[in-house]
Length: 421
Image (cartoon, rainbow, N blue to C red; front, side, top):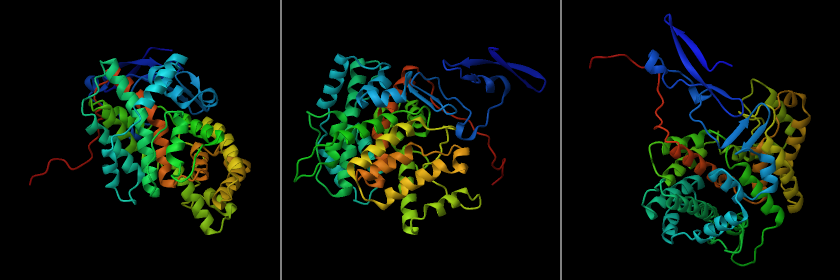
């Protein structure tokens, strides 16, 4: 394979180097394109544009492959804890026993949140969307920790990472409790990270609470499956904001806002809203399957197929099994979940969906699980954000350590030319 590519423009030959990834991806390095030719590229949505070189996550949508730092998502979700995977994403390797003990204990030590956060939380009406609250509370971390993260100081950077991992699930659970009008819970030093998340979200003040192993396991898997996903909208936002040398907390808050959109992190919420729509209409799943196949009907089945995965979503295979286990253990009688099961079975057997590889994706199953656990639909994206946090941190860290330039896309101007007043 040639190590450069030629562009002929107005009779002049220009050469641009090729960049090869470790998984046989090849890119044209066009950083000198404008300087050499006066041209820019136009790529709406950056579908064909690589914004960086990254060692964190590999994704092959055609083959249904997802790996963090070289480890398959299947191995990680089935054998490791979320905190072990967070360490892998941020630092490049799975932790040793000694490193894991320190990592977990440091997170426990930093898990207390300043009491003044309750004042900020109280100022929001109960009707406020939890993603707006979470983004605001994350931004507020800057006010309570005003000094900028010095990326050249290993100690400062480590403390910032630990602080975010420790306090983020507390703020997320408080957002959930605010919605429900319930008293706020604090983490327990005796519990694991995922057990603490369940404890803070679900424990009632008038009874003891211990999350089942099945619930803890499925939450752990969901967090791992959402931990990173290459250069998606929110991750690119974190890197873009961080490229201005905005701080880690501010960059993460921007990622939360990007994740909020229904085309990104809000997809699992859209699944439940669609199922509710079907229930209200009478629950005839075959009717809505026909609507989904009708090109002239605007209805779309949410949670089926994926923009990136053209064959199957490897995360969906993992979480389908966990969803079946949770639903079996909880034994919930919910017409919406019954509709979800029927849709799943019909889609897996319908030639239209099978031929187009429109299989249920991770958003379909995660929405079902969160509903079964009693989590409000508006909180689904918050749960996504908890999982995505270590990926955002890892991407921000990589961008800063690589000394990437400030993000500054070009444009093709199509407005009015010079006009006199």
